Length: 380
Image (cartoon, rainbow, N blue to C red):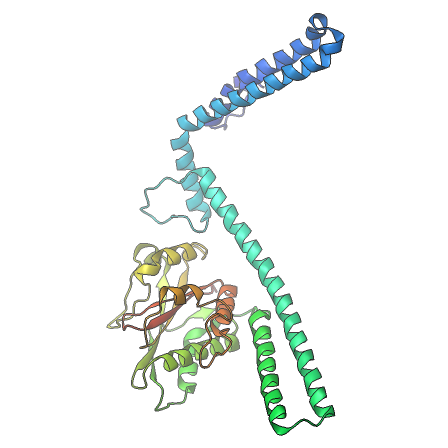
């Protein structure tokens, strides 16, 4: 160990304190090792020499580990406040996702906890990517197997002469198999990654205007509080998703009800400091208080100073139950009238996550349900 004067001048004082504390246990261990090598053979019979050396080194190792643990514990206790302040500065500088980095937070974040959190999140993201790849492969194989089975059934029907009712039942079964195979491919297929952003405000206008008015379904209105909303997402895919969300909301609402799609831009500071935000005379809750923690965790993954585009689709049906909120994005878990296999919301979630956004379901102020989409505004 170099003398104190030869150490690097930029070494933090707490690091120097730890080095000084560890110096004595290491030095004592080295002296003990030298004593074992030079003196033990002179006092221990040759037959017991190996056993004696092993016992001495075992005792020395146990003592050294215990001493080092005690020294490190004392050092951590003495310098915990300094470590916490350094960790808070590093977390605020790096913007590790999921940690409270907003201005005004007085909590001191331990360094180990901060980086363990970041490492765990990175591992989860990696596992999620691998799981998605595996599901895509399994889904494609299952869809191909279903299509092969359907082709075999068709060949059997063409080669034989069954009665009309058998043919009708077989045709219905084939249509179900084809729909299931198409649903699997839709759910597990790759999500396009466009190179240029699209204006979702224009996209919402086009989707709302393309919906035909029907007397047996709720009316659709739009409340747009943003001039533009450039998001890096596939236009055709998000247009289909918005249309599906509006159709599901119309089906869930009474015929004389109103379905609303609300679009607004939210600054990062609004998300971190004000979990509930309303615009104009709208009664829509853009950021519901119950989802404030989810929102704060997500916004940490956005680039610093970024804006996000909020899209909220509300209906006038019944409020979602806790089970519905938990299972809404599970494939095949919640079939609907226009979604017999229950893959619409899981597919929408895959598209939103691919665009580095988030989506969740919550109750609306009108008493129904609200689907919230948050997408980061593309920087140009």
